[in-house]
Amino acid sequence: MLRRLGLAACVTVLVPLLLCRGATGIDAASSAIVQQQSKIEAIHARIRQKRDQLQFEALREADIKRQLGETTSAISTVQARLADVQTRIDAALVTEDRQKRLLAQAIEALQLQRDAYRRRIIEMYESSGDDRLGVLFGTQSFVDFTERWDDLGYVAAADQREIRARDEAERAVDAMEHAVEATIAELQSERDEQTQSRNQLDGLAQERSNLLDVASQDRTHVAAEVQELEEISAQEEAQLEAMVREQEQAAEQERERTGAAPVEPPSPGEMQWPLSGPITSPYGMRLNPFGGGNTEYHPGIDIGVDVGTTVAAAAAGKVIIVGWVSGYGNYIAIDHGGGISTGYGHLSQFFVSVGQEVQRGQAIGASGNTGRSTGPHLIFEVRRNGTPVDPNPYLGSR
Image 1: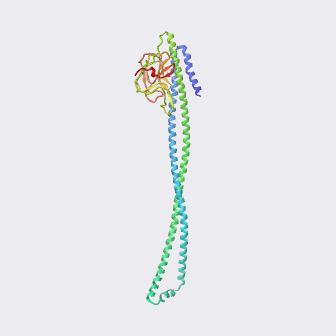
Image 2: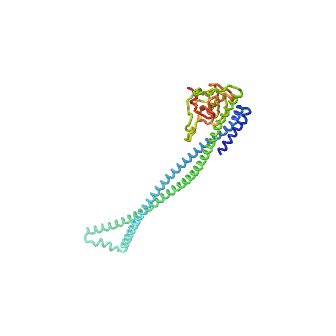
Image 3: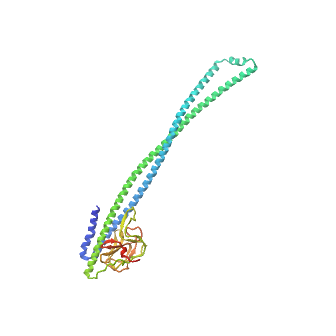
């Protein structure tokens, strides 16, 4: 697909150039470049839009990942609570089993007390009053009478203590039984609540996992679209080089036709700096300033300056391109003869037009932040036969 797009773009650019070359020369070729600028701007507008969309999709994916992480953490917390509740239920069941054995023993003891007390009542009922009185009056002395009277009191008091002990034991048995049942019921209720929470969180986690899959697919799709547009943009850069070569050849042919003296290309070290400012990005391979961690080829020197700083021609020559060009934004190219040309990108204003002769140091535009740029600066290029080369050998001292 990219090869087809690239071929179509080349045909769109080069055919008008070749058709116009014989008719009107360099000006017609420059006009064809200008016509191409609207197409280039549309592509870069799409790139900017897709980059914004890619950033949104990346943020959305990261947010869903965060939410899924929070849900997973909440599930772990609830699972830990469930394990704790189950441990307490198991302990309560062990306690219940032990209490049941104790209850059985208590009930057995109670039953023995009841049986003994029942026999005591029967014996008292069956015994005659005379016999009981006989116990007292059958004594031989007052002292013996008193002792027997005390003995009967002790027996009565013992009977009362047995009754109270039996009642307390019955209440204790009931209390223990109810306490164990209440504890288990409370723990089971807590377990049911935690289980319900875990089920809800499981559903939420599945929902967010599905959303994450969709977000990841969307981000991947948009990233592929950005890459495709970037590849198209790279092809346009190659087309720009071809255009510059065509323009340089046309300029030479125009000079030959008019009999103008050939332009001597600047020798190494003869070009002046187009403006004064720090170099924010050198020529050659660099880390992609737009992120991603990959390296890219940088065809010129970035000079950091404020928007509106005057840009000067590095050497005398003829302006061959003025307008919007691919990632350069507002761009000027000057042919200096001998296959050497210079380029000035990301401009905010133009002070020259195509076909205009300029002198070394002449103001040609103002710096800006147009095109594929991370901030106000000027990209300065030197091209040999349309191919970018290191500008440093051509520049004099600053």
